[in-house]
Image (cartoon, rainbow, N blue to C red):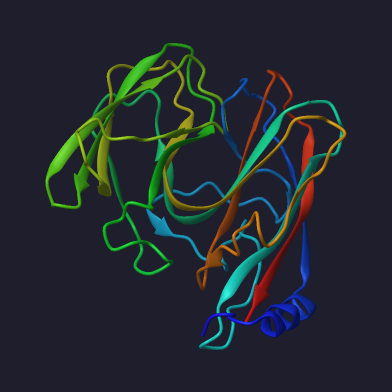
Length: 270
């Protein structure tokens, strides 16, 4: 049962707890490129680098902790803030997503076919046509200095196997994420089955793939300003039961890693 009255909304806000989140940013970064905070220290604690494909939940170490409501109640994002607490970068952007599934352990020196077998979990507010599921290449340990291309093999929602070719930059940094967008018109990825590098990057590193659903995006234009999202700007986005809430961060300058971002979020239920 959704929150449908003002009284229900006020009661849900009064009962909800504020979660103070804080994350260090990876020490290697590039201007305008999103970096994952999954393995970074802070609150929530750092998540582990995944190996074989796995579904993520609110119980996965690295997720924002919360407890599912008693049915038929639902969970919503009622409040979100963030700032750069060192005030060293003017423009920052933060994305909050439900990290649905992930895998890692792939090598930057392996030029053979590397198995992935990553799929979308059922539920979690994913649309039946999967158009609100996003796919990312996520780097966990910096790759070598030789740029290469990566051919990603996937199965679409019509059960047809296709590929998409991605660029792997020189020394792809730990934490960097790249959105995977099919080049076949109207294709929607249902699962990623494998990938293959065009050549060795020179360093094995560690990379993998992540599937997620977008919940919120926020930004600041000045280092001294905190961005505040209320029930209007959050849209009272629904948070699925068992969601694995995860942050991505980008900045307007290079070499700003090691700084921290922090803020609060409030999940309300009713």
